[in-house]
Image 1 (cartoon, rainbow, N blue to C red):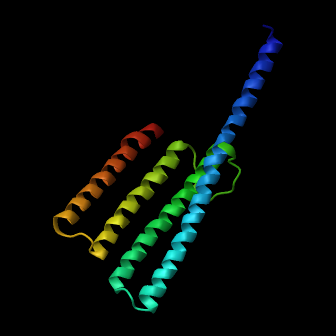
Image 2 (cartoon, helix red, strand yellow):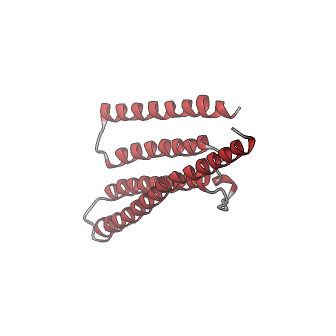
Image 3 (cartoon, rainbow, N blue to C red):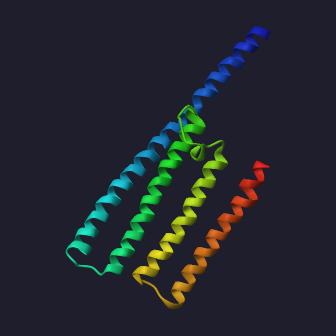
Length: 168
């Protein structure tokens, strides 16, 4: 094979490889749509609970507070979906989107670390919601707290030992 043929083959392979990164557009758009849909649905549910519980007085204030905590959790998830969408797009498709410094993704590990931190907060918010609505108590509440702690600790160890270790 001649040198010219080898160069053409390498150039063609590079073009094909560069276009395959566009596969990330599908999950990026999907996550964006899911995040938006979840935000809208959560907002509608929060308005409904506010009208029913606060304005009309059909629910206790602690019940409303517990639902608000759940909605905060769902809004947090919708923001996490948006961040994942943005991260996939900037990592694989185009890094020319102007982002604040705190929102830039340099590699896939950055994206995983952001997702893990949101998951840890969501677990804490979920636990707080169960405490406020008093749906569980006693030993069940203790087990839920311990299970939540174990998952958060495991994710923290994963970030420190696996993700942060790769950066060194």
